[in-house]
Image (cartoon, helix red, strand yellow):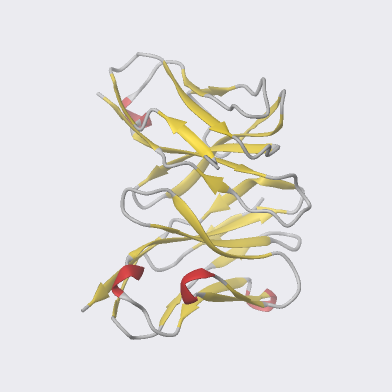
Length: 114
Length: 114
């Protein structure tokens, strides 16, 4: 099983550029999330989705957009990159709520905005 | 809203010594609780989880954690640490109604003294 796959692994952007971080899972999970990890701050939830066509904001959504057109994919879009968005980004997926479930994480995307 | 506090930013223990990492959570109902480990440059791996039932849960790699509702705590323990346990450890809390909205603590970095 591939699990949760994130691409790219590394990316350098210039301020103002846009890009999309890709996330795909092959476990037929309903729930998917995006987190950013910054030193001393742990993982902070950016956006999450409870199923295809449904998304919601997390703790730090500003500057990011998401969509969920299929169960498998949950891309994260940076509309106009800023140095404050330099971080490591993790995508996670999990089964339906109310069940004995856990989040599975991708390997991360290290993004630098210069 | 959920929140998680890990009061220790960095802990150093000697190889073979016992370990306890602290985690306090805030959530109005019965929480889902998790401990994840992150090795340098890697994604997150689930160590153990608590959903209900026995308040002492066993995980992988010889770790265990105890849920104490009266103290709102979910501390991670290991009787004897190995050099390979050096990593960053994250406590997380999830809401029963939304498995994807998992909130993480800021993490505790564990170093092992030879």
